[in-house]
Length: 349
Image 1: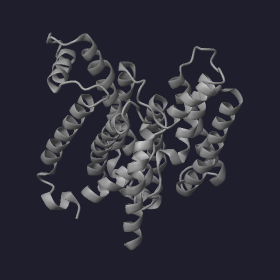
Image 2: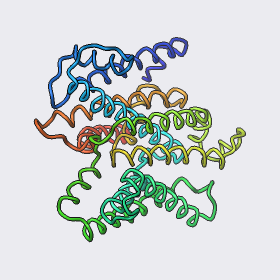
Image 3: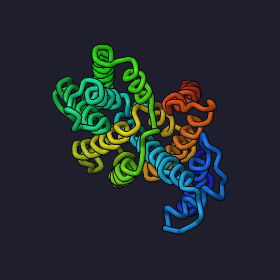
Image 4: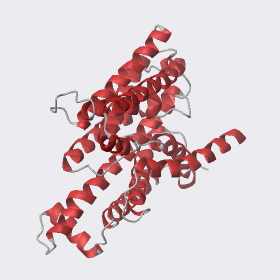
């Protein structure tokens, strides 16, 4: 039974805000406190207070740097990526009315990977473009390719777009993955190939405050756009015709929502690489807990996705002593069994 039905709508907002605040706070503290180097929790708190409120607690400069510039930024970006990917998965599943829809199904992550290797391996950009910027351009190109292919397949954008976008996304993913493999095989040496393959599996090691300054506003803008169209997403669950019958401008809303999901996915993937299963599994977990109303589901997905990816990042740093795993490996190890459970539950209904 959805949690909303149990506690009642009247007390839901205060309950949700309180639980969300507690969960995010706990996840952030554990994300900062746990790592390859053991640092006392009192040092962690003093370092955060020094950075957040310009305090002057006596902390070893090395510990201060690890906490403030490495672990805190990494944890914030992990939370933003988890929230953004979960929201995009929810929007795509609702718009396309397909439980298997996922940001990666549209080929955006594959395009980002291609853009990254074109900059770092093939040398496109002559050293002026960064790897993240190249990934962002590649992600946007991939989405444009998938959208154009879907439009060409149907002759129009609105009515038959659901199934055609998924098919176009599969074709786009295969095409851009093949391009990525071709560039690596043709141009990369062994060290470059190892580095780019690690990034392709999801890597938060390189994020700093520049990435935080990009991830936070992109998440806030994307979340606001999706929340603004929450009631429209409820109508899309019954089909485009049903949405149009209640006065929703179907084409405009589809363009805005798909644009928002493309922006969030492209930016997050450009910073940390491909991280799968978040957008696929988290929306299902949120529906199980909170029902199907999107004004409830959207913030729920954001919170669950953020906590999920922070926990996965902690696991990536601690599962193997002295070695950091790609976070995509951890999300797949957790997400695949969870998705199997969802499939089995769905088949029994």
